[in-house]
Image 1 (tube, rainbow, N blue to C red):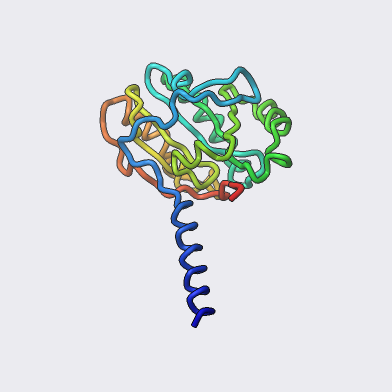
Image 2 (cartoon, rainbow, N blue to C red):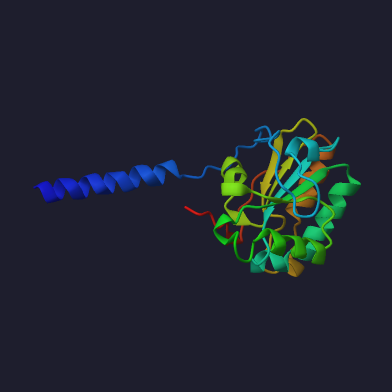
Length: 202
């Protein structure tokens, strides 16, 4: 009887622990989380999301160095980086892979990757996956688009075929930017992010 009680208590403890680490995606319409908090950038000066936001909004991308989906999407990432800049939208790329921070996603490796990919936006280190948790980000690449007022208008995938970007027929992120700038609501405003899981320490 005591053994059964201990087993039940242990199971309950695991359930509580799992519940505490449940990751909920940021709802559409939300303001930019942790907007004033400074993040270290491997390719420039430390920056906050509020500082990175431009007059027409902010694009936040969760990414990393080694995910096959990220690598396949680099051409699209560069395209969206350029498009955001042309449309007056600030952009940052956040690396939340804390479990690989001493390996493939170490600061030096991030710096080399940013140089190789010619990143023209801050590539930021998310310590303890704090920003990934606040956004509810789970995959790489995964994007969050905020309007001029800092309100979330689109989240999810950049396109409809992340596994083979050259075969994509719909570039969701481009459409979302266009809709946002014309004052219209994007439909769908949420898509499923497909890619590698963010490697949290827990």
